Image 1: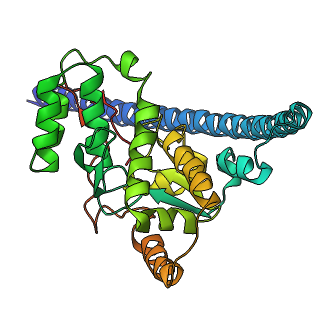
Image 2: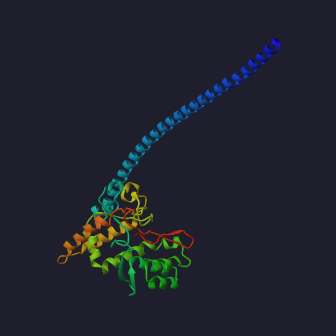
Image 3: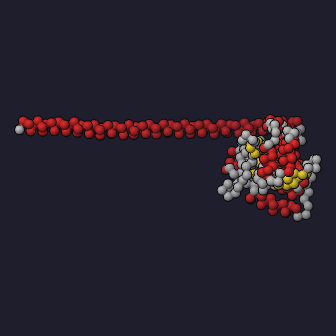
Length: 315
C-alpha cells in the first residue's frame, strides 16, 4: 500500500508540475506578445513623428516657393506696365489694374455675382429684346437661344423661347443637337457679353447698380472655371479669393461693361439715392456667400444628356 501510495503521490506531483509549467509558459507568452505590441506602437509613433517633421519641412518649402512666385509675379507686372507705357497703351491704368488684379490682392472688397435674385447674374429674370426684335425672359435664355442657333437647332430654339419656366428652358437647352463644346467655346464669350449688354441697355436700374459699384472687384460665383471663380456661392471657398482657381471672365466682362457705361452715365433725379439703397441691400443679402443651411442655391450648370457638365452661364 505504501509503495502504491507513494508512486501515486509522485505521479500526481509529476502530473501537476507539467500543468504548472504550461501555465507559467502561457503567462510568459502573453507578456511577450504585449511587449511586442508595445514595441510596434512605439515604432509607429516614431514613424508618425518623422512624417510630421517631413510635412513641416515641405510646408516651409512651399511657403518659400509661394513667396518666390509672388516676387516673380510682381516683376512681371512691372515689366508689363513698362511695356504698356512704351507702346502707348491708351487704357486707363487704374481700370486695367482693377480688372486684371490678382486674386491675392483683392482682399475683402469684392461682390459675388450669381443666383436668380441677383440683377447682375445671367439667370436673373429681366425681359430683353434682341437685335431681331425677339423677346427673351432673361439674359440666360438669350444665351441658350444663341447656343441653339450656332448649332442650327430650330426645335431647341423654339423650346427655349416658348418655355414657361426656367426648368423647361433648361431641358430644351440640354437637347440641342450636335452640340460640341469646342465649337461653342469660339462663340460663348461674345454671346455672354452681348446678353449682359442687352440687359443693361434695356433695364436702366440694373445698369445704375453696375455703375454705382465703382471700382469694386466683381467675381462670378459659379463652378464654371472659365466664366467664374470655380466655386458656387454655397461653398466656403467662394468667399476666399486665395482658393479661386477659375478665370472669372464673366466678372471681368462686367467690369469692362461698367467702364463703358460709366463714360456717358448721368444720374437722374433721386436715381442715385435709390440705387444706393438697393446696392447696399444686395451687398448685404445677395452679393455674398450663401449659407446652404439657410438658403437654397440653384446649381450653376446644366447637365448634358449623358450627365456631362455643359457650361452655359456664369450666374
